[in-house]
Image 1 (cartoon, one colour):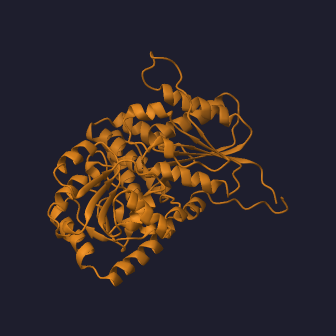
Image 2: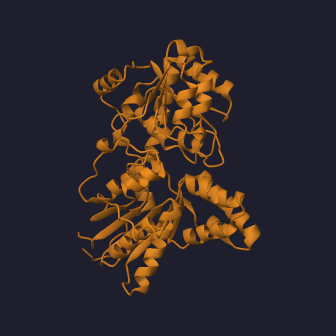
Image 3: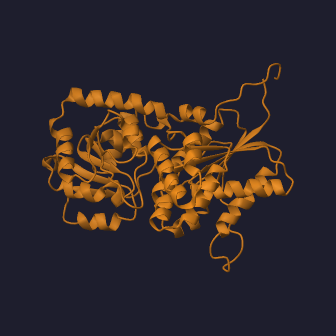
Length: 424
């Protein structure tokens, strides 16, 4: 049986950006190669543009390669210095028009509505107006920052015109998806606020059309890491198994790093374990200053994707005390699901946003911002929890996290069409 060639284009902030959703794009791209897509493209930003934006980036010399058949394109900006904004977006849009002009059945997935969904909608409209008649199906996936950063800032500042543009662009896609049920509910709630001011009908459309597709995770990269590799990685870092509490995430206030550093000073377990802060982000310098006189706190800013599961496996506990902030709310918690696959010590996290959709009943959960509860939870996990209880949590966590495997998520997001009878 043969199928006509198909192309998948994902417009996204891809590697080297440190963000779970860049990993989403990679995982969907890899699965697409096994699902009949003959050409897979990640359309993303030039690395100098990412660096200039101040985004936290992975070490450029240690990025994992993509499989043959996946092409990462970073179109150069269009125009010169007299076009201060929009130059890179014009490059992305123009390149997508060129791809749509080719006679290939194409699925276009945009992740982060602003500006990636605009790139897709503008490119499809331009291709059709130019007479190319593209065979294209568009999917827009709203992730955490779309709601917590973009939509909410529009609502706080009374910029309903910008919110209207965002919703109109989102709903112009053939399919609209949210990264979690929490995100879907926030989209609907935000749409209701816009409707109340503007007389629009976005909320009803969102209730009817927005579905949920959880982040896809490469389970094989986290399950059953080689014990020798775990020990070697810890030795390189001067660490021992069960000898540290791990925070591995972006170093920002919304991830609760300030609460964790304050709590660690009060923990009984600090005499037994170190606190390892693995990651970079806008609060890194402040976090270092908070821990400047504490030799039990270790900062690692160069952890790559290969080392991540090894550090997760070896820790005594994994702490992500995320909390809601004006610019970000944890809408799922990809790192939590990755940790659940890797095994090792139990997870301590909070009820913020969509975290419970990630961890279910397989973590120790506290209220966000409660430093005293964080102290007690980590001390209990490290000092008082029995081996049997830790093992039970680990098994439950793995079972739940496997439901987010990238193949499972891909097949739900892009169901395979059954061939017509008699067509080979």
